[in-house]
Length: 273
Image (cartoon, rainbow, N blue to C red):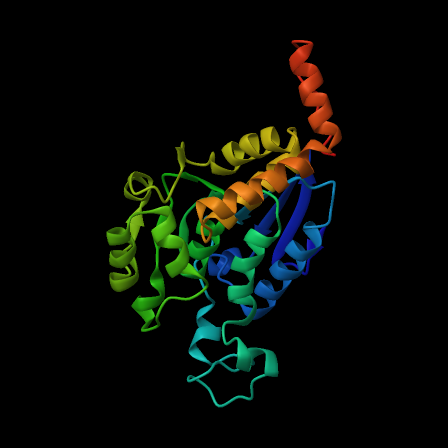
């Protein structure tokens, strides 16, 4: 199935594969694509048949960032400071609109999201990759906080994400210079978790995602929520939150199956409920 034709979606063994699909533009994000991605992830949060999500791009790119036509103010939709076109009330309050909202949705979907990166992941595309739980990439990957190269300050959450994934100094260098990091350098900096053979990023991401999808997915989702909450919480707060979360997961069928299988010394058969 498709959401329009610039976002593709399919389900494979509990894994929802979301493909940004504007290959002639290296999957650069325009307003409509960003809106559709937000809507799709909002729906996926409540779909029990999708336990893990893989985010990737069509062709030879992950996502080259914001669409140049939109960023220049030359498109149909206005952009603050660069065009005189009227802005919707929503955009007046949130100039980046669905571009930034999609970063939030990657976290708030409350399911593991795995990035499969081939080619450029730049600007907003880098933000989306960093918001994912894990990043698989091949040797063609090129990562860049590209906003400054166009005279813009960073957006889409990239300044929150970068120092949490890599070092402070690397984060500052990337947002201040817009330098492109090739695959090996990005891997060494921790921006890429798994560097695989060329053309194998999606395959490797799917293999990892299917293992997660076959696990106790309620417990996995709650554990993921705990880690994100811990980024802005104290130890005492997390000890209390984890106690509540553990009680929630203890009431699942998978918890009963997992403990029973442990006692019986066999491999558990989890059902995701």
